[in-house]
Length: 101
Ligand SMILES: [Zn+2]
Image (cartoon, rainbow, N blue to C red; front, top):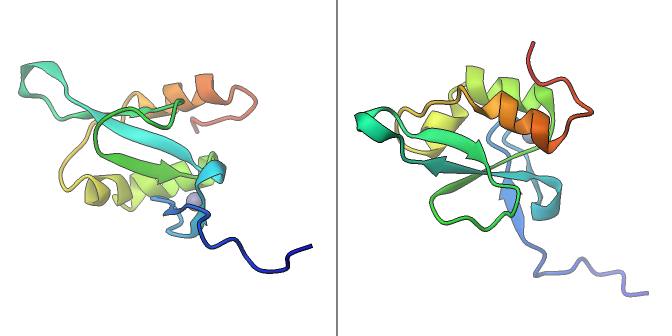
């Protein structure tokens, strides 16, 4: 066994709790333009590779809550974003959890 930590393991910061985690433990969020000059919408990117500025979130309702309340998403995307669809997206991504409180 090689006891060293793999140095090329990609890591990302969760926009909710701000902790660094391996990429495969986080869900990628992507900003999608909204029609009519409305704020861009944040959606779940299940493929993890959609074009556009991404943000990363633990698949955890507590982290979602933090990201929304602390404005982590707006900061990550450098501007106002519409997160109205996010809880629903996360619900279809992981239906075993309760995302909306
Ligand atoms: Zn988190």
